[in-house]
Amino acid sequence: MACGTSSALAYPVLKERYKVQLISLIEPGAQAAVTASRSGRIGLIATAGTVNSGAYQRQIAALKKEALVFAEACPLFVPLIEGGFVEADETRRVAKEYLKPLLSEQIDTLILGCTHYPHLQKILRERTGPGVVFVDPAESAVAEARKLLEKAGTIKGKNSPAPKHEFLITGPVLQFQEIGSRLLGKPITHAKHVII
Image (spheres, rainbow, N blue to C red):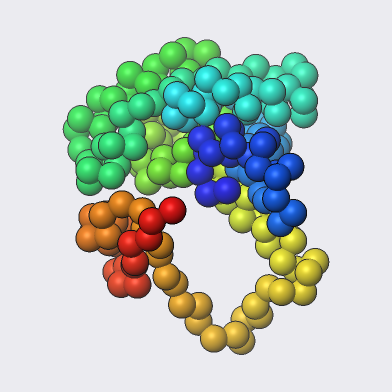
């Protein structure tokens, strides 16, 4: 599930409903944070839905009882990123305010609990300095998916043809292509509008 909020809120229901193997961002992200943290003082930035669900907090507590999770909802980050303000002064000011309470708790690890947030690593690093380890749960989830594909023998090898990407969009296609191309650093050409 390539969304922190859907992983936090929908995954517990959907994993029981569907026979296909689903990978949440929560478990792999929590494990990576517990492994990375030296002090057990872990920060979480995410959407309000993810923070309020308590999913990361419960998973981290299950992995390491003595760990402390300090969570901050960051509702302005997604519109700033999608609006193209990744390195804008406004985004820097917002990041400063969101990170202030977490840094005052002396976190040594920060979970980027929304798949948009890795695009802000540069400005987040400006605020945290090099002493805070960033955890991108998507990287850990991809590693889990790779293990499943290798076990099933369905992963493509290095000599396989290059993949073809098709994006199915529920919103405006041109807006997705423009923003997505900017964020990915390469043009998105195969995008199609779908109604779910």
